[in-house]
Length: 253
Ligand code: NAP
Image (cartoon, rainbow, N blue to C red):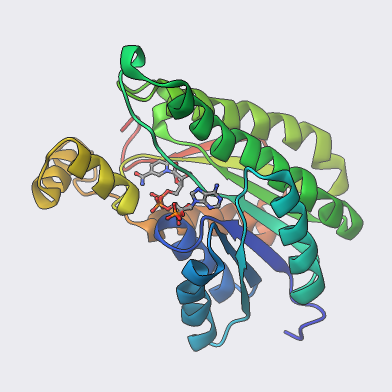
């Protein structure tokens, strides 16, 4: 595909974990990919993996919760890669604590990255999708949206993202833009490794314990989520919008 006809995707939080696997997968699917993360240098590894496989990618440093940085990032992506028509809002953080110990900043940071970040990125990117009369937005929710002890902030943000997704699906549908959420269960990444560490658990034991409670009897891998993103972003998924897909190895893990 020539550079002028190749569609451009943005994946946030794509330096590692689910975001990195998604960026690599979308590049293999034929997209040019903007790999956005807090530090441009951290995003370079994913870009190198994409380029080594023959793809096109750009590392972009931006804090998705900062309006000025988001505008600058999306403008730069449009100028250097092409107008973005796919957006995967994946950047995320956890600040777990029981409610009575949760600080104001634990609450605010989680809301800022997940909710404000997805709002700012989507608002900045949607104009390119409307111009193209085609677009795909995928927001990373979580099974925690259903409630999870110690995650009042994260659960509220991830449930909020589902409402955000359904609303933008309604607003943008007539422009050929779909919006869907993916709600992963337990996925083996730095985020869940940090959780195991915080509660003083050995990682291998923790994975085995989590896997034992999952119907397909294993922990999820970033590629499991990338595969679901690839489906929502595909041409054939144009009549699927406003949905939440739980990707958790079972009905409710
Ligand atoms: P991860 O390994 O921690 O990766 C998240 C990435 O997002 C990191 O590279 C991080 O950068 C980046 N990031 C954080 N704040 C950012 C900001 N303000 N602006 C730009 N980038 C930012 O996480 P993951 O496990 O792959 O999770 C990816 C998404 O899936 C998250 O939204 C998460 O909530 C969701 N999810 C994960 C699981 C799971 O089990 N892993 C389950 C359900 C949902 P730094 O390293 O610099 O902080």
